Image 1 (cartoon, one colour):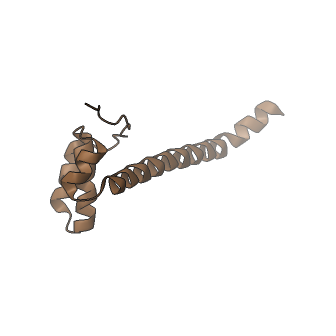
Image 2 (spheres, rainbow, N blue to C red):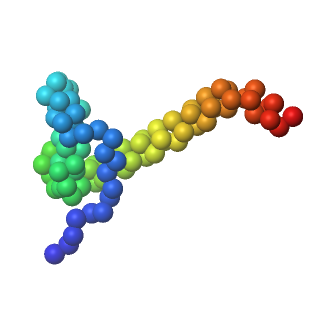
Image 3 (tube, one colour):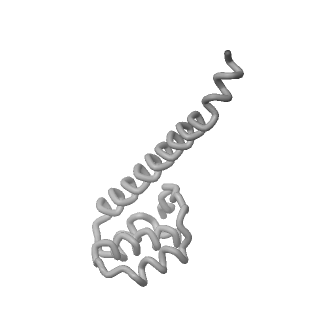
Length: 99
């Protein structure tokens, strides 16, 4: 028997927040993706979650990969933004120490 996929899920949003989004969402396309994320949070495999929301396993993997890439991009973007703000904030102090 095969084990579950070992794709890590970035849990920046709580399950309660996902349930709240599901409750208030009207767009069926978005609802499918929210349920997919919910099932993955509940430790279903990508294939199991995809079947539950009525999409192919390939689509499930595409959604999973898209979220991983998006989350990684946002982390990098936030880090760069923080670094830029830090440099702007402390630029004069840094110059005075170096010079």
